[in-house]
Image (cartoon, rainbow, N blue to C red):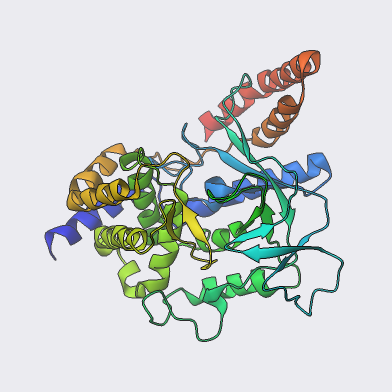
Length: 393
């Protein structure tokens, strides 16, 4: 066993102690699902859906996996509009199986060109309620079907021209979502950098992503956390989105033989390979704004942040990180927090807090003050009980 393999096994062990296991990820996902159920009950509607890293189970906190959300992260909540679903039209052709009267919208480059009037996402920062750091509120519109997903097409080959290594259990889940009787595809208010805001909506593959994230092995989840750490904390100021870490994970699952994921001995090798893929993809396009191709929607790009540095600088920074990968891995290891046995946190007031936040965002004056006051009374009444629950656990 060489030095890097030994370092990888040591790192994987530290991550286990910090709670980064598929078992803990499933518990956190279940808590997010419970939060969604409470929201549905309180609203008497299923219009609010909890997505993002908290619901995925991986990545809401990079120091530990215990149900907590780090200050620089948030809970993604998608609000589904009650309008008619969009029918994505490719090359002006309608699919024969779509019988309902849906709103037709041209589909191109991962977007449907439909002026919804929805505003882009808005965030609710840490507030006077003081229970959670932030929510990211996303308004969405149902689509009646998914665009073509290359991974699920007959004869699919990977980016490198080989047969896919994606686990069969994940492929089955993706097929059930895409080809099932009621796919939950939706589009969100977002436009690419070269088009004005509001000119189109971006097709979301959130549910496909969640199907993968909730079925990662321990090593696959640990790999994702390290890559997200490098993008979010080491390469934080150059314009890379953390969503890029997800796409790199998917490409790695697609292209990496299963034996590489069986133990932690290849962990650093896999991280290095993923950054090399990132460099290759950035260098393969002349667009200054495009970082890589979206894994599920191969006709679409994943873009850099709005005020990103020049692509050449971004590429140089990633290459520099590759050169000093062991040093950066050391920083990551130092950031980990060892958990006590049974150290998962359950945030019993997340759902109520979110409802209060949404109403506060829309309210003004005395109404706003009344909502804050009412929630404060609930918080003050339940907080001692929650603290006692944590103590006895």
